[in-house]
Amino acid sequence: MRTILILILLGLVASCAVIPKGQMNNSKSQKISVGLGPEDMVLDTLSSSNPCLLVACDSRRVKMASGWIYKVDLKTHDTSKIKRMNEPANLVFHPHGIDLVRLKNGDLRILIVSHDDASNQQAILQYRWDGDVLWFEKEWKDPILVSPNDVCGDQEGRIFVGNEFKKRGSIISPILGMKNGNVMCFENGKAFIVARKFCYTNGLATNEKQFFVAATRSPHIYSFEKNGNQLTKRTKLCKVKGADNFFLSGNNLYVVCHLRNFAFIKHVKNAAQTSPTVIYKIDISTGKKTCVYSNTDGTINGASTAIEYNGKLYLCQVFEPFVLRIDY
Picture 1 (cartoon, helix red, strand yellow):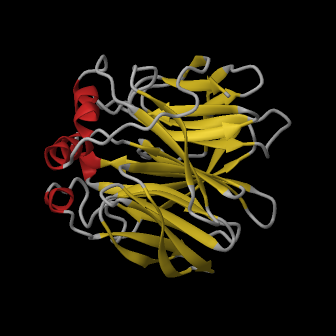
Picture 2 (tube, helix red, strand yellow):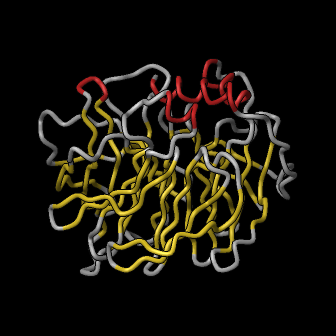
């Protein structure tokens, strides 16, 4: 509910933007049923011969006891809840941001932002992924992990997390555009901040040499040079409004944007209300952006992550229980 309140207040200070015409407005689409609130997802082409999506689901309008990770088989579009093993008995599981990382030793690691707002505790949950089961390995907590939204890892085992603000559920920060969000890193059991001065730190993505940050209350996507745990040479990669989560594929960065805050606020309160969806593909070498999908007809509302695979675009969203497949 704190995130919902923030979005409502943001709507009071943000103007509406013109929705660009994406090339797939009238494309064929299919709804793939998953759990409530599939806010973030990752593409897995590594664990088996069957590519799949791993989707972080949680009830985000009305809190439930626990969330889930769903698996979507991209050949059959069959879906299932993923079994989680070896978790501590008292673990709180309310997934938000998620990432899949292949370590240098070949292991596949899943990283998940989990919120325990009832106890005012935030955590990054680390699992080993074998293609069928999530095997719990570690729960990362620290005093500087205060308002996590998204997470990404690298092959060296580093974990990067975006703190939206200096306090979970801050109201004043987004209204005033205060840049008190940051990017932090867990490495070798230590936690430290690696980049500062963001308002509403959101999507994160990295490759071997670059690091990307979306700050929802900023009109830009930021790019850094990455050297180990050091992020340097901060630049504005391109201009967008209301950026949410990333999907990095080769030289292309896909980002979902919320351009009309008032429409999204209405959808927060009422699932029947439409909230336009806009997806950009950004060339990370040049910063050139292309609108690859947009709609205003409610085909999907409050979209939050877009993944392109094998000529299809897959979109997840903040609230409703489906992933949308769109044919190019």
